[in-house]
Image (cartoon, rainbow, N blue to C red; front, side, top):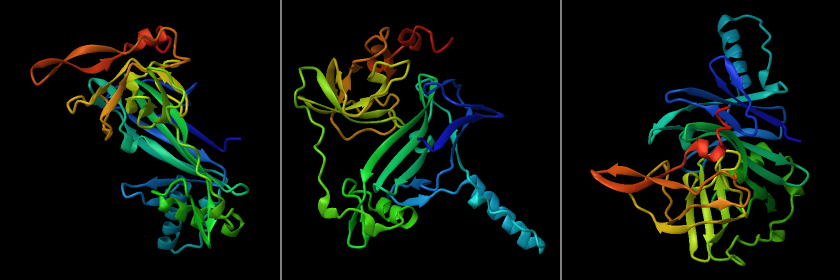
Length: 320
Protein backbone atom coordinates (compact mmCIF):
# COMPACT_ATOMS: atom_id res chain seq x y z
CA UNK A 1 0.00 0.00 0.00
CA UNK A 2 1.42 3.34 -1.09
CA UNK A 3 1.86 5.69 1.84
CA UNK A 4 2.35 8.98 0.02
CA UNK A 5 0.39 11.11 -2.43
CA UNK A 6 1.43 13.65 -5.04
CA UNK A 7 -0.23 16.55 -6.81
CA UNK A 8 0.68 19.69 -8.73
CA UNK A 9 -0.46 23.16 -7.68
CA UNK A 10 -0.99 26.01 -10.16
CA UNK A 11 -2.13 29.15 -8.37
CA UNK A 12 -5.14 28.20 -6.27
CA UNK A 13 -5.86 25.05 -8.28
CA UNK A 14 -4.51 21.56 -7.71
CA UNK A 15 -4.13 18.72 -10.19
CA UNK A 16 -3.80 15.01 -9.52
CA UNK A 17 -2.52 13.31 -12.66
CA UNK A 18 -4.82 10.79 -14.32
CA UNK A 19 -2.61 8.05 -15.78
CA UNK A 20 0.28 10.46 -15.21
CA UNK A 21 -0.98 13.16 -17.59
CA UNK A 22 -1.34 16.72 -16.27
CA UNK A 23 -2.08 18.73 -19.41
CA UNK A 24 -0.60 21.41 -21.65
CA UNK A 25 1.59 23.98 -19.89
CA UNK A 26 2.90 27.26 -21.34
CA UNK A 27 6.26 28.97 -20.98
CA UNK A 28 6.90 30.88 -17.79
CA UNK A 29 4.38 28.96 -15.70
CA UNK A 30 5.18 28.29 -12.06
CA UNK A 31 4.22 24.80 -10.94
CA UNK A 32 4.39 23.56 -7.35
CA UNK A 33 5.02 19.85 -6.90
CA UNK A 34 3.59 18.68 -3.57
CA UNK A 35 4.15 15.30 -1.93
CA UNK A 36 2.47 14.31 1.34
CA UNK A 37 3.20 11.24 3.44
CA UNK A 38 1.78 9.83 6.66
CA UNK A 39 4.47 7.19 7.19
CA UNK A 40 7.42 7.68 9.56
CA UNK A 41 9.28 5.20 7.35
CA UNK A 42 9.28 7.70 4.46
CA UNK A 43 11.53 10.76 4.47
CA UNK A 44 12.14 13.37 1.78
CA UNK A 45 15.80 14.08 1.08
CA UNK A 46 18.07 16.15 -1.12
CA UNK A 47 21.16 14.77 -2.86
CA UNK A 48 23.71 17.31 -4.08
CA UNK A 49 26.35 17.09 -6.80
CA UNK A 50 28.82 15.52 -4.35
CA UNK A 51 26.17 12.89 -3.50
CA UNK A 52 25.71 14.18 0.03
CA UNK A 53 22.31 13.23 1.43
CA UNK A 54 20.36 15.60 3.69
CA UNK A 55 16.88 15.49 5.14
CA UNK A 56 14.33 17.80 3.52
CA UNK A 57 12.30 20.00 5.86
CA UNK A 58 8.53 19.54 5.64
CA UNK A 59 6.02 22.39 5.64
CA UNK A 60 4.83 21.24 9.07
CA UNK A 61 8.35 21.31 10.52
CA UNK A 62 8.92 24.77 9.11
CA UNK A 63 5.67 26.01 10.63
CA UNK A 64 6.49 24.50 14.03
CA UNK A 65 9.89 26.20 14.09
CA UNK A 66 8.32 29.55 13.25
CA UNK A 67 5.67 29.15 15.98
CA UNK A 68 8.35 28.30 18.53
CA UNK A 69 10.43 31.29 17.43
CA UNK A 70 7.44 33.63 17.72
CA UNK A 71 6.52 32.28 21.16
CA UNK A 72 10.07 32.81 22.44
CA UNK A 73 10.22 36.33 21.06
CA UNK A 74 6.86 37.30 22.54
CA UNK A 75 7.76 35.84 25.94
CA UNK A 76 4.34 34.25 26.24
CA UNK A 77 3.34 30.92 27.66
CA UNK A 78 2.03 29.86 24.28
CA UNK A 79 1.94 26.10 23.97
CA UNK A 80 3.34 25.45 20.52
CA UNK A 81 1.77 22.55 18.71
CA UNK A 82 4.56 20.33 17.45
CA UNK A 83 3.77 20.07 13.78
CA UNK A 84 6.60 17.57 13.42
CA UNK A 85 4.52 15.06 15.34
CA UNK A 86 1.55 15.47 13.02
CA UNK A 87 0.39 12.44 11.07
CA UNK A 88 1.14 14.14 7.75
CA UNK A 89 4.33 15.68 6.43
CA UNK A 90 4.13 17.78 3.28
CA UNK A 91 7.00 18.65 0.95
CA UNK A 92 6.88 21.21 -1.86
CA UNK A 93 9.15 21.98 -4.81
CA UNK A 94 8.80 24.93 -7.19
CA UNK A 95 9.14 23.65 -10.76
CA UNK A 96 9.89 26.38 -13.33
CA UNK A 97 8.65 25.83 -16.88
CA UNK A 98 11.31 26.83 -19.38
CA UNK A 99 11.55 27.18 -23.14
CA UNK A 100 13.79 24.73 -24.91
CA UNK A 101 13.65 24.43 -28.72
CA UNK A 102 10.30 26.27 -28.62
CA UNK A 103 8.73 23.64 -26.38
CA UNK A 104 7.82 24.01 -22.71
CA UNK A 105 9.71 21.66 -20.41
CA UNK A 106 11.23 21.39 -16.94
CA UNK A 107 14.84 21.29 -15.79
CA UNK A 108 16.19 18.06 -14.32
CA UNK A 109 17.86 19.87 -11.41
CA UNK A 110 14.62 21.17 -9.89
CA UNK A 111 11.70 19.11 -11.17
CA UNK A 112 11.51 16.42 -8.50
CA UNK A 113 11.15 15.45 -4.85
CA UNK A 114 13.21 12.47 -3.66
CA UNK A 115 11.75 10.09 -1.07
CA UNK A 116 13.48 7.35 0.90
CA UNK A 117 11.18 4.52 1.97
CA UNK A 118 12.46 2.01 4.51
CA UNK A 119 11.08 -1.47 5.15
CA UNK A 120 12.27 -2.44 8.63
CA UNK A 121 11.37 -6.12 8.48
CA UNK A 122 13.15 -6.89 5.22
CA UNK A 123 15.84 -4.21 5.35
CA UNK A 124 14.88 -2.87 1.92
CA UNK A 125 15.43 0.74 0.93
CA UNK A 126 13.63 2.39 -1.97
CA UNK A 127 14.70 5.72 -3.45
CA UNK A 128 11.65 7.19 -5.17
CA UNK A 129 11.66 10.20 -7.46
CA UNK A 130 8.36 12.06 -7.82
CA UNK A 131 8.81 14.38 -10.78
CA UNK A 132 7.09 16.73 -13.22
CA UNK A 133 8.35 16.53 -16.81
CA UNK A 134 7.40 18.11 -20.12
CA UNK A 135 7.34 16.46 -23.52
CA UNK A 136 6.50 18.80 -26.42
CA UNK A 137 4.56 21.10 -24.09
CA UNK A 138 2.55 18.26 -22.53
CA UNK A 139 3.30 17.62 -18.86
CA UNK A 140 3.37 14.46 -16.79
CA UNK A 141 3.53 13.60 -13.10
CA UNK A 142 5.62 10.47 -12.51
CA UNK A 143 6.65 8.29 -9.58
CA UNK A 144 9.63 5.99 -10.05
CA UNK A 145 11.57 3.74 -7.68
CA UNK A 146 15.02 4.57 -9.05
CA UNK A 147 16.63 2.19 -6.53
CA UNK A 148 15.06 -0.73 -4.70
CA UNK A 149 17.95 -2.27 -2.78
CA UNK A 150 18.74 -4.53 0.15
CA UNK A 151 20.67 -3.10 3.11
CA UNK A 152 23.19 -5.28 4.96
CA UNK A 153 25.22 -5.18 8.17
CA UNK A 154 28.98 -4.73 8.03
CA UNK A 155 30.17 -4.81 11.63
CA UNK A 156 27.95 -2.23 13.32
CA UNK A 157 27.42 -0.25 10.12
CA UNK A 158 24.63 -0.34 7.56
CA UNK A 159 25.95 -0.88 4.05
CA UNK A 160 24.35 -1.05 0.60
CA UNK A 161 26.66 -3.09 -1.69
CA UNK A 162 24.53 -2.37 -4.77
CA UNK A 163 25.25 1.36 -4.44
CA UNK A 164 28.99 1.64 -3.78
CA UNK A 165 29.03 5.21 -5.17
CA UNK A 166 26.42 6.40 -2.67
CA UNK A 167 27.95 5.71 0.77
CA UNK A 168 26.15 8.74 2.21
CA UNK A 169 22.83 7.07 1.46
CA UNK A 170 23.74 4.15 3.72
CA UNK A 171 24.88 6.53 6.46
CA UNK A 172 21.64 8.52 6.24
CA UNK A 173 19.50 5.36 6.35
CA UNK A 174 21.32 4.14 9.45
CA UNK A 175 20.96 7.45 11.28
CA UNK A 176 17.38 8.27 10.29
CA UNK A 177 15.46 5.14 9.25
CA UNK A 178 16.92 1.84 10.44
CA UNK A 179 15.99 1.01 14.03
CA UNK A 180 18.42 -1.87 14.60
CA UNK A 181 21.39 -2.43 12.28
CA UNK A 182 22.27 -5.70 14.07
CA UNK A 183 19.06 -7.29 12.76
CA UNK A 184 20.11 -6.82 9.14
CA UNK A 185 21.65 -9.65 7.12
CA UNK A 186 25.42 -9.86 7.10
CA UNK A 187 27.17 -8.27 4.11
CA UNK A 188 28.75 -11.71 3.53
CA UNK A 189 25.30 -12.87 2.34
CA UNK A 190 25.17 -10.30 -0.48
CA UNK A 191 24.93 -11.77 -3.97
CA UNK A 192 25.37 -9.45 -6.92
CA UNK A 193 22.44 -9.44 -9.34
CA UNK A 194 23.19 -10.39 -12.95
CA UNK A 195 23.85 -7.38 -15.14
CA UNK A 196 21.36 -6.53 -17.90
CA UNK A 197 22.98 -7.59 -21.19
CA UNK A 198 22.24 -8.25 -24.86
CA UNK A 199 21.93 -12.04 -24.59
CA UNK A 200 19.24 -13.49 -26.87
CA UNK A 201 18.53 -10.26 -28.73
CA UNK A 202 17.99 -10.14 -32.48
CA UNK A 203 19.30 -7.53 -34.89
CA UNK A 204 17.92 -4.05 -34.14
CA UNK A 205 16.69 -5.15 -30.74
CA UNK A 206 17.91 -3.69 -27.46
CA UNK A 207 17.28 -4.19 -23.77
CA UNK A 208 16.67 -1.24 -21.46
CA UNK A 209 19.48 -0.98 -18.93
CA UNK A 210 17.84 1.95 -17.16
CA UNK A 211 15.35 4.74 -17.75
CA UNK A 212 14.97 7.83 -15.59
CA UNK A 213 11.56 9.47 -15.82
CA UNK A 214 12.70 12.69 -14.15
CA UNK A 215 15.40 13.31 -16.78
CA UNK A 216 13.52 11.74 -19.73
CA UNK A 217 16.49 9.62 -20.81
CA UNK A 218 18.14 6.26 -20.30
CA UNK A 219 20.51 3.62 -21.58
CA UNK A 220 20.07 0.66 -23.93
CA UNK A 221 22.30 -2.35 -24.53
CA UNK A 222 22.34 -4.27 -27.81
CA UNK A 223 24.67 -6.53 -29.78
CA UNK A 224 26.19 -3.30 -31.17
CA UNK A 225 26.99 -2.05 -27.69
CA UNK A 226 25.50 0.48 -25.28
CA UNK A 227 23.53 3.49 -26.51
CA UNK A 228 22.02 6.46 -24.79
CA UNK A 229 18.35 7.15 -25.46
CA UNK A 230 16.25 10.30 -25.07
CA UNK A 231 12.46 10.56 -25.03
CA UNK A 232 12.48 12.34 -28.41
CA UNK A 233 13.45 8.99 -29.96
CA UNK A 234 10.88 6.84 -28.13
CA UNK A 235 7.42 6.04 -29.49
CA UNK A 236 4.75 6.86 -26.93
CA UNK A 237 2.45 4.79 -24.75
CA UNK A 238 -0.80 6.62 -24.02
CA UNK A 239 0.89 9.78 -25.23
CA UNK A 240 3.87 9.46 -22.86
CA UNK A 241 7.36 8.54 -24.10
CA UNK A 242 9.15 6.33 -21.57
CA UNK A 243 10.80 2.93 -21.18
CA UNK A 244 10.91 0.30 -18.45
CA UNK A 245 14.09 -1.26 -17.11
CA UNK A 246 14.68 -4.72 -18.56
CA UNK A 247 12.15 -4.55 -21.40
CA UNK A 248 13.13 -5.39 -24.98
CA UNK A 249 12.58 -2.70 -27.61
CA UNK A 250 13.30 -2.33 -31.32
CA UNK A 251 15.31 0.51 -32.81
CA UNK A 252 15.99 1.68 -36.37
CA UNK A 253 19.70 2.39 -36.05
CA UNK A 254 22.31 3.91 -33.80
CA UNK A 255 24.37 6.97 -34.62
CA UNK A 256 27.34 8.85 -33.32
CA UNK A 257 26.49 11.79 -31.13
CA UNK A 258 26.93 15.24 -32.59
CA UNK A 259 28.04 17.81 -30.03
CA UNK A 260 25.79 20.39 -31.73
CA UNK A 261 22.68 18.24 -31.30
CA UNK A 262 21.60 19.21 -27.83
CA UNK A 263 17.88 18.93 -28.53
CA UNK A 264 16.05 18.58 -25.28
CA UNK A 265 18.92 16.83 -23.49
CA UNK A 266 20.47 19.14 -20.91
CA UNK A 267 22.88 16.52 -19.59
CA UNK A 268 24.82 14.79 -22.35
CA UNK A 269 25.88 11.18 -21.83
CA UNK A 270 29.53 10.17 -22.07
CA UNK A 271 28.52 7.39 -24.47
CA UNK A 272 29.49 7.80 -28.11
CA UNK A 273 26.27 6.43 -29.60
CA UNK A 274 22.57 7.16 -29.31
CA UNK A 275 19.61 5.05 -30.41
CA UNK A 276 17.26 6.33 -33.11
CA UNK A 277 13.62 5.31 -33.64
CA UNK A 278 13.00 3.24 -30.48
CA UNK A 279 9.64 1.44 -30.30
CA UNK A 280 8.40 -0.59 -27.27
CA UNK A 281 6.16 -3.60 -27.92
CA UNK A 282 3.03 -1.87 -26.59
CA UNK A 283 3.57 1.54 -28.21
CA UNK A 284 0.54 3.58 -29.25
CA UNK A 285 -0.78 2.12 -32.54
CA UNK A 286 -0.86 5.59 -34.12
CA UNK A 287 2.65 6.48 -32.99
CA UNK A 288 4.92 6.85 -36.03
CA UNK A 289 8.63 6.37 -35.93
CA UNK A 290 10.34 9.61 -34.85
CA UNK A 291 10.63 12.09 -37.74
CA UNK A 292 13.23 14.74 -38.44
CA UNK A 293 12.75 18.37 -39.42
CA UNK A 294 15.37 20.56 -41.00
CA UNK A 295 16.87 22.93 -38.45
CA UNK A 296 19.20 25.85 -39.06
CA UNK A 297 22.48 25.52 -37.17
CA UNK A 298 25.10 28.20 -37.78
CA UNK A 299 23.53 29.02 -41.15
CA UNK A 300 23.57 25.42 -42.42
CA UNK A 301 20.54 23.18 -42.77
CA UNK A 302 20.98 19.98 -40.80
CA UNK A 303 18.87 17.22 -39.29
CA UNK A 304 19.57 18.49 -35.80
CA UNK A 305 16.67 17.19 -33.78
CA UNK A 306 13.70 14.86 -34.11
CA UNK A 307 10.15 16.17 -34.15
CA UNK A 308 7.09 14.19 -33.17
CA UNK A 309 3.63 15.64 -33.65
CA UNK A 310 1.77 15.01 -30.39
CA UNK A 311 -1.57 14.83 -32.21
CA UNK A 312 -0.24 12.12 -34.52
CA UNK A 313 1.02 10.15 -31.55
CA UNK A 314 -2.22 10.29 -29.61
CA UNK A 315 -4.90 10.87 -32.20
CA UNK A 316 -5.60 14.16 -30.48
CA UNK A 317 -6.71 12.39 -27.28
CA UNK A 318 -4.51 14.53 -25.04
CA UNK A 319 -6.12 17.71 -26.28
CA UNK A 320 -9.69 16.45 -25.88
